[in-house]
Length: 141
Image 1 (cartoon, rainbow, N blue to C red):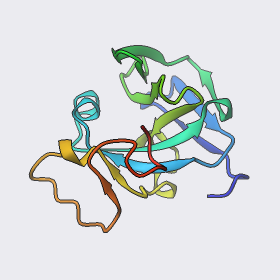
Image 2: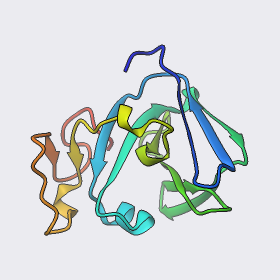
Image 3: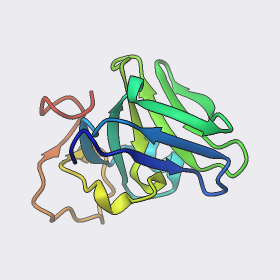
């Protein structure tokens, strides 16, 4: 994706909409327990974007502090998870790829938190795998 691409997305009911005006910094598939519990999915694809490049329209997402220093945002109407943010990366927001209008344009480049992956989930796509975040230098930490 080049920097001229504008990404858009939103929740299931359409109340929360967003636009990203810069290319994602990274894309990944997360296997942590917290993301699984928030979404009900076996693993979750994310893109990391500059906070300064993200703007919301419509209703503002509702924030939930899921653990110290971690905020998860969702639509207060339909419950769709929208974003993840951590004080460890204050200039960045992680968006759920499934909320993008074109999720096919943001394939994951690596897997993170594979130490927490569900045992029956086979990862055989050849992408780099990191047991925890922050291990590979380019992924979220």
